[in-house]
Length: 249
Image 1: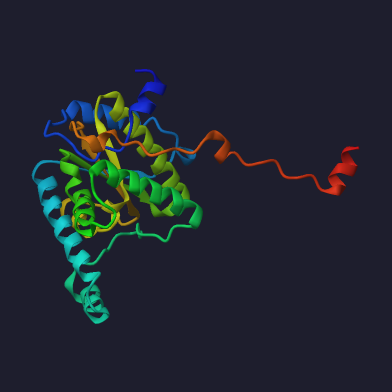
Image 2: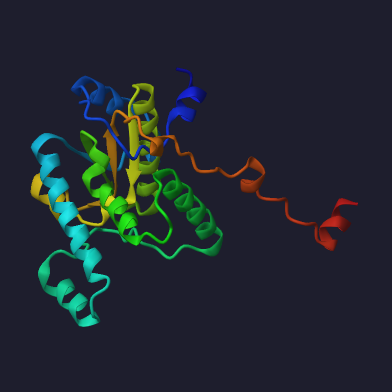
């Protein structure tokens, strides 16, 4: 495929088939992602790949934690405090993926959510169905592979920038292989389950996860949220001040 075709084909896949991904294909994808540019070529990221039994254990652990926290959201404050201090199920990730969105960005987020739930046939008022769909993040939408991306804390925001470029290249490489992917901030809510299965250097922070596999033939995978126009993202030239106008003349 040429670049534009690959770029158009890539979309967030939220239902995967049971077809396994060949180890050689995964290695090609990772090798392609390593062609990404980074700050002074520091390549400040690491990747954990979960498959097989490790993947199944993570599915169980993360879904259990999600449902525990989901129930606690409706519990009295003292029960939430106790859970935070003692039960070991509360989020322990390096970043907080649940944010308060600025109004300009919240509008786009809401439109995307409404479109997704419409594609899934979930009514806005059906909170139980919405919770079940959210829980599917933690079973990796049935994907045969889950990747977790870590960035070195030492470069701050630039580590995250480089990891984002790496992640985008990886997703495009996956599309070129005929694979689907879904980058998931929700998978950064808990770090401790990953530390049971992988040796994670202390200086690396968990940014997000990525489900990877072959897309299932389901309507949700055809959903494409609306993108901004070119005009919307371009900044306008600053208006001339009287002094600038006088200098020009």
